[in-house]
Length: 140
Image 1 (cartoon, rainbow, N blue to C red):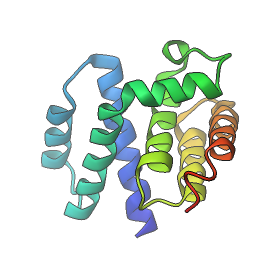
Image 2: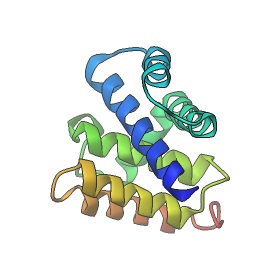
Image 3: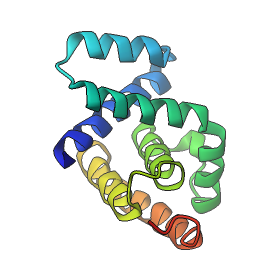
Image 4: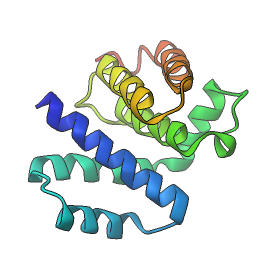
């Protein structure tokens, strides 16, 4: 199951990346991906939950990023870093089914795969600071 969830996070990141770069509607991207890839239904449901959650809470997620990464304006971050942070913060603060450590570790792995050489350090620092601050709220 962990492998399926990681793959779902990769696809969710791809959807968010495409939206950020092109402005395509996320519903259209999801439909196209589901039609073209062999994605199990439970993974597709998780992908939709992540994408809809990030899009629905984007302003709040970006405000959290700004708070914990004041030296890195959200709009100037790489598209990959920005969307990995959005995904991980959504999972950490708003998805009761993902333990905090898992969300942070998965985000770091995504950053190592898709980000620059220093992305994982930024992701780890922001998420670690956020988790420390919100630990009473997110103790899972």
